Image 1 (cartoon, rainbow, N blue to C red):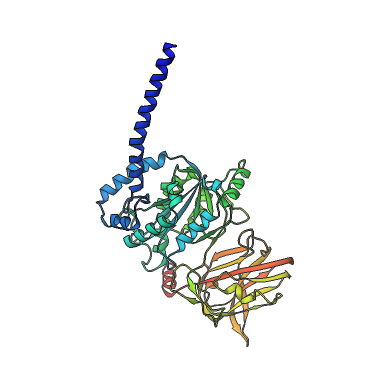
Image 2: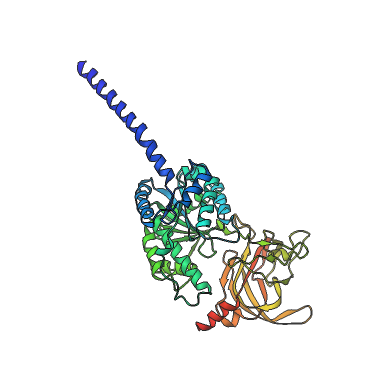
Amino acid sequence: MRCSIRRCFLTSVGIGFLWLFITLKVPTEIEDDQNVMTIQGQVYDVPLSVSQEDSYNRREDLRPLEEWQNLTSKYMKKIQQRRKTWLMVGISSVPRPDQNSLSYTLLSLFRATSKIEQKRLTVLVHLADSDLTWLRETTVHISSLFSPQILAGQLLLIHAPSDIYPTVDDVRDKDTQAEFYSKQNIDHAFLMSFATKLSDYFLLLEDNAFCAPNFVTHIHWKVNAMRSDPWVMLEFSNMGFLGKLFHSRDLPVLSHFLLLFYKEKPLNRLIPHFRTLLAQKNPILCRPFLFYHRISYFTYNDSQKATPVRKKNPYGPDNPPGAIFTDMKVFDVHFPWEAYTLDESFFWTHNVSAGNHLTVILNHPVNLNRVQVLTGTIVDGKYALEKGQVELGYDPEGMPQYCTSFAVLGHLLEGQMDQEVFLRSLRYNVSCVRVVVKANQLGGLIIRHIHLWEENAKEAEATESWR
């Protein structure tokens, strides 16, 4: 009995000391964590316990780079000690004409996930630009919108200082897009390097994406279904590098691969090459597609619905002026020209036959470097064109004009096609773009978007110099 009383007394004293240690130590660590913010280091942990004005003032008082990097290194150990999540979503963001692009993407991402799904999810954003004003404003804006996610450890912002980037001065011509995609490759190499060991799987998104509801559950189901089949990359979108899923264990090799070959190809062409090097010969497309690009860089002229008035922007489609014709059935809503606008309208028809077409006849011949055709609904892919191809037309004649010759650019895969025009014989002096139905199809058909990217004069000169 005496022994029992003594043991109870010692236990009570021990609990008392433990409580005292926790009350003194833990708030200090939490305060330190919340006040850590690196601008030229690698991690932002946004200070949500202070006002936005205070956070602005702190950002103005920049310390030497060495101190920031030491602080980052110390904080990285805490990040690595956090509980691993099942899925890490990685986004590299740069300034865009649409300043809210990243916010809309994060909003779509968190709205598309349930509370249960968010417990298995971490979102990592690399702010990949050296403009301190943009970094400050973006960080404060994101912290004000997504403070619950940041406090829960579901959203992390990082930044790699510009002086650790390899030089891109000798990449072709500095005025061409080669410099852009070289930096983009390095941005994503740093993103993937940081994400190593923080999750089981890594999902690559872009900062102008729309996410389908419950995408985490869809991805989890697909990964379980593929458990017995080895894979390197699963594709939940067929648009560039959007929606690509990797094993996190492959991220160190992939980031090193991007740093080795950052000057050679754009990211959307390097990643498939990496996949084949790791012995996955063919792409694995996972339907329904869960991620799509948002197009939000444009204003519109109400008097000419088919002709958008563009803001100067290097990322979005150009869609030069033209007229749209079709031999498919047309109803009182969702007209053919709506497939060529740059908003979210679309063309709706049904019961199409082999040989039916939707044709864009451009006002003037243009040089194209990319064509994108999207059919079907956004979320579940219903009413997509099952068998179809995209053709480029030349040598217009007659009144109204029509193209006298066509060449096949590519076939729609799962109702989608997003293809660069590499051959000189195809890309120059294009007057028509035609979507052709290759088999009879009962039921509805939605043609959402026909997007065209023009080749500018500087790109044409660079292309010629490289031949």
